[in-house]
Amino acid sequence: MYWINRWLGRVAPLNTIQTARLKAWQALPKSNFQADTEQTRWVVVDVETSGLNLSKDKLIAIGAVAVLNGKVNLNDSFEVVLQQPQASSKANILIHGIGGSAQTNGKLPADALLDFLDFLGNSPLVAFHVTFDQTMLCRAIRSFLGLNFKHDWVDLAYVAPGLHPEQRLHSLDDWLNYFHIQNDARHNALADAVSTAQLLLALNKVAAQQHIDTYAGLQSVEKNQRWVSWQG
Image 1 (cartoon, rainbow, N blue to C red):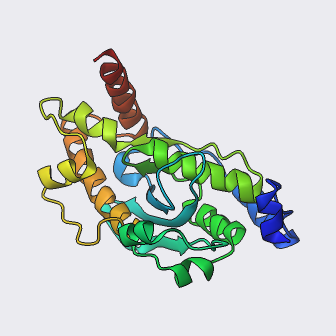
Image 2: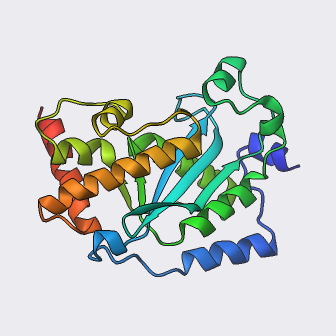
């Protein structure tokens, strides 16, 4: 019945425990965007999907790690594979390495997404090229939890060139190489989140030199760079 409801586009009703968990998350206070950067708990996230089509492909895995006190906290990290009705294509599996058995035996999506929200708390989200991760997460949360997921994000794909306008770099790999950040497990959601978190720390140091030391300050950098990119 669960996957019949999904195929028909209906949200399967949450049970009592799931409903309570969702309400508890919704009741959390908003983050303080004026808090010092190093005192803010950031959650850096990356997702793996069945493809790149934002309207059709499915969320397969979420990886996330917290950044606090100027450090990437590997003890405060999150990784989950969402159960799929059938495995993605072989070509897709070769990209992220999540095999067919791991996909079909993953965690029920509603529980996996609630686990992610519990981990997230009210921390701001960080990603590189936010649109993809945000769209896939929002669509899954709306489909499985019936929630219109609205949360605050910072996109390092705009923050990085905003702080380093002299550089003509575009991809995550470009910026990782620029800051000498290694990632030996590219396209693993948690590994990509960790390397993006290291990029965040490097950019926070540059921002501090420019007297930008709050989450709201980084949001302003992103907003200004989006305007510059649009004008260009």
